[in-house]
Amino acid sequence: MKKSIILAAWMLAAYAGIACAQEPGRNGNKYVPYDQRSGNESIVYFTRNLSAEGLILAYEQVSAGIEGRVGVKLHTGEKHGPNILPREWVRALIEKDLPGASIIETNTYYKGDRYTTAQHREAIGVNGWTFCPVDIMDEADTCTLPVRGGKWLDRISVGSHLMDYNSMVVLTHFKGHSMGGFGGSNKNIGIGCADGRIGKAWIHTTPGQSNQWNIKEEEFMERMTESTKGTIDHFGNHVTYVNVMRNMSIRCDCAGLDVPPVVTPNVGILSSTDILAIDQACIDIIYAMTETEHHDMVERIESRHGLRQLSYMKELGMGNDRYVLIDIDNGGRRITAQEAAKDLKPFVEEK
Image (cartoon, rainbow, N blue to C red; front, side, top):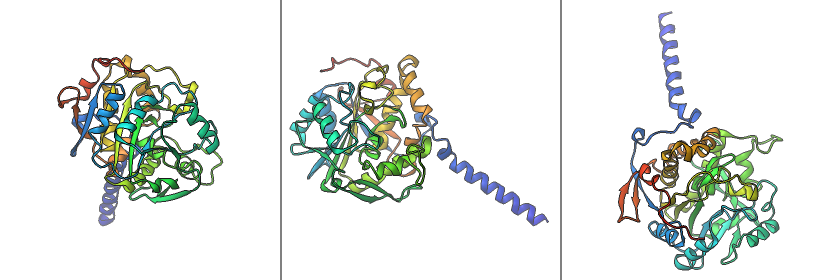
C-alpha cells in the first residue's frame, strides 16, 4: 500500500514536471523580456536609413555566405499593394550586390491574384517586379525537404525550383499578419517557400478536414516554423536575412488594397545570419515603442499567438533570442531595442 502511494506520488510529480516542461509549447504567446532569456547572443545589424542605400548597407553586413546561384525570397504582393517593398530599393540591391540573382516565390493557397501561375505573373508585372527574373518555384512541380526534430511535420513540400539555388537571401517586409500575428523572416520562408497546393495545405489544414484553414494559433506557428526549418537546414550557411520595418500594417501584403491603414511608426532595416535573432529583435523594438505606437500591432501579435514563432524557433535550435544590436549608422555602436525604438524618423524616406 505504502509503495503504491509512493509510486502514485512519483508519477504525479513526473507528470507535473512534464507539464511544466511543455508549458512554453502550450503558452508560447507570452512576451519574454530580454533579461529573462538565456543562451548565446547573435549579431543583428540595424540602420534607420530607409532607402536603397540603407538596404544595401544592411545586406552587405551579412552577405559573406551568399554564393553561386542566388534566390532572393521576398513577398511580391497582391496587385497594387501599397506597403510592399519599394521596387527601386530591391533593384538597386540586386544590381550592386546580387547580379544574376532571381526573385523566388510560390503560388498562394488562397484564391486571389497569385493563385495560379498565370495570375501570379500578371500580379508580378502590375507590381513592377520586372527588372530581374522572377521564378515561381512551384510552377512546374514540387519536391520535399526533411524536417528534423519537428512534432507535426517530418518533411515539407516546396516548389521544385528551390533546388536550383545555392544560396538564399530572405528579404522581408516586416509587418503584422492576419493568421501569424506578425510576418517576419520565419513567415516569409515557412509559408513563402512551401508550394501553393501541398506544402501550404500541410501547414494550414489537418488532413481530412473540409475547412482548409482549420489550423490556427500555436499549432499553426509550429507548423510554419517547422516548414522554415526544413528550408534553412537545406541551405545551411548559405542563407541570410534582412527585415525592413516600414509601412507596418497589422495585415500582410496578401491583403492588397484591402490592407488596414498603417498605425505603427517606421523604424529601419535589420540584418542577421540568425533567423530567430532578427525576428526577435524586430519584436523587441515593437514592444519597446509607446502604447500608442504599438497598441494595434501588439494586439494583433498576441491575439494570434504569434510569439510562439519565436519560442518554437528556439526550441528547434534555429537560432538565439539574445543578440547584440549593432547601430551601423553610428560607427557600430551597440544599442538596445529601446534605443532603436526612439526618434523613429531621423532620415527622409526615399519614394
